[in-house]
Image (tube, rainbow, N blue to C red; front, side, top):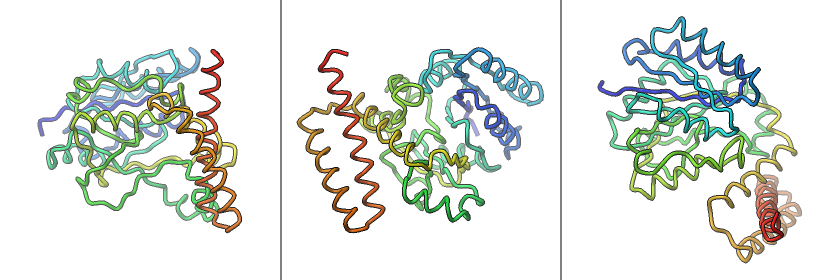
Length: 302
């Protein structure tokens, strides 16, 4: 088909998840024909865990017919790990997967076919929920309340243009990085905690590139129940606030009215008993409060 593919997986050392993902990659339809390169960008926090990741990748490299290699990035940050791997990748298409997803057998062919069928330079694949999680009533109630795990099932036809990205399953032409630069290393897990994909999407759109949706390029996301809690809800929205402050110009004069509005709307929807809107307002409260805290620290010279 003319495209060379590099699959880049940044990991903090979650061995069970990496093994599951590598196993699913080894079982892809068209694997021998399309000959993808797999690069695991090892961002484990200590050398003991890093060596375990390296050994696991080595085990798969020994049995796979095509390159599967390990790249070490000891400095914390998902974006740093991805940026470490990008210059080393040989593909014209760079595909990024989170380490806690599992690909479906037709995923790789769908990725490649997308770039032949459409003129978009960036692909957003589907990120779906496992069937057992979809059928769990408590999980569904918690998801509706917190919305703290990313799933991408838009219901759009293939090729529909999007205005944002979710980094757990996306593919980007190498030439895009040559023009807009690499991922912002101040953002994402290991740094500000979130929004590295959203910020990158803004840059590529501003550069005139198109992001397209491909529902046939499907992965299944792990359901981490620890993310469906009040504590994680607070942490996620605080991370979002700090992350957006890191790449968007936000003055105190803009933050304070939004902060006060979030307090009012939280109280209002609490009185009305509208659970969903109450939690949306609560999330904005944590978001803007975190922004104010960061602004205060900077003003104090910390």
